[in-house]
Length: 240
Image 1 (cartoon, helix red, strand yellow):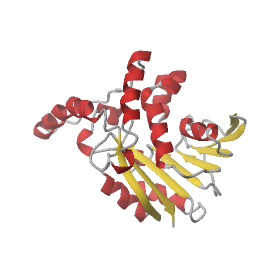
Image 2 (cartoon, one colour; image 1 turned 45 degrees about the vertical axis):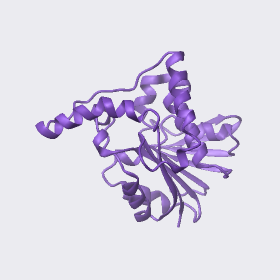
Image 3 (cartoon, helix red, strand yellow; image 1 turned 90 degrees about the horizontal axis):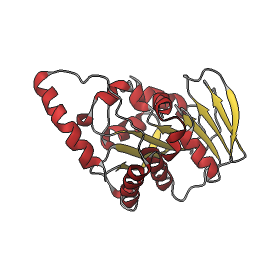
Image 4 (cartoon, one colour; image 1 turned 180 degrees about the vertical axis):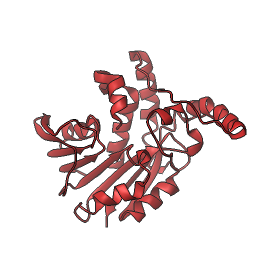
């Protein structure tokens, strides 16, 4: 999760359709598991670790080099630690929610954590999908790339992760995003101009949030089988 988005949404992040829907998709991808200890890498505010603590996880550590200092909190009465860096981890779930697209060496970053994780730990990764959806929002967030599922699986395997499943999410809102971004992408193909930095994240009213959240909730039953299209790519695997 990007700290810039946290700054934009503030407390409203808890009610934003995008984050609420992504948290549901995370839970769906982890169906049948009951993680006890979580390592949330590039965690930002710890939104997703907090959600898992409320669902019954026992403790979580959020690591992000952008934190001003280390600190300890609680969520649902359970320990929630924020650290700028760590040297080892016994977590049974590693989360990388929209992290790999921010670094030049995505496989290297992932490998640096699988090396200190215990064998068999679950890894859950999300990244923005499809390079042709590149926009000024990617520039604003300092993204390096977007991913197709095949590329994400290659990165995971090269970093020592055994891939169990992968799928696209936000397929319900994909047509709208594609309609908005495709004309600009075609234009850039002819002109060679890069998009200007522009934040596309917005606070929404209750009605808009409810509508978009309903669309995303409706696709959850098909989500594990969706290898066709979506705005986010999900991958679940295990540390080899």
